[in-house]
Length: 296
Image (cartoon, rainbow, N blue to C red; front, side):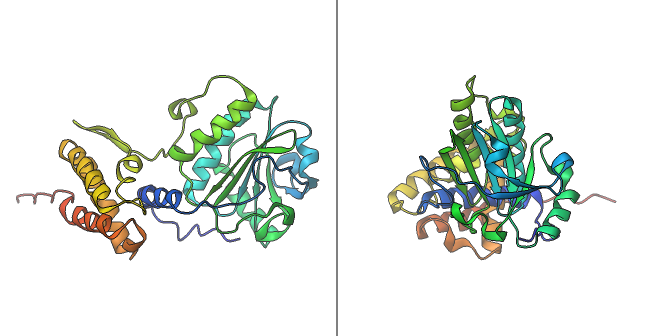
């Protein structure tokens, strides 16, 4: 596995574009990766990366013992995948007495991967075991992992999967609450909000003067549904434009997202032809106001 650190786009590009991409992925056929709910976890070989476990060859189930587990397979290291993983593991670390949590990275060159992880240690959640799985990019053979996803997240109890999340475009706002809900079902206690989790990078437009915070995913999602009829697209688009009328900053944000999609040549990947016409319209209509030239 390679980590395209040098080619990572700016954080704003990643977060805004993933707003629409992850919505679209969620509306297509479901993606599967790893053992499904009710299936038993198989043991597999891992290598420790940090501290007392560094360089040691271990068995995953032996490390987990009889505790419930939160296991995150990282297929690809991106800023959204780091944000999701860190938020989940920082929450899980508060329940160490009740749950064993670990991050398992996948890659064909274990030595190079270990070096990259050590350089990126500052981005890893503190106090969470970090491992590299045997089996290269495909991971443990018995797990049937999908190399086309970014994260595979498994929650288990008594070595049986209670929840499986195969994430192509990980999102703190969309995915973390679902996983935390499954963790709380095992550990007990109140269900925390994203704010209480201290989540960074939650995918909503920032609070704007006179408009409030806008959930861009929830706002634009109905417009770009693949199975939406032209009438449904029209109705959803009218609601979106009503929000834009009250919140110019949100309109400009949507326009910027639409322009990035078009610039990347990905317009046909989003919704129906009716939805694509609205994205083209918003890309042209909603732009940042031109800066005034200073007088000499």
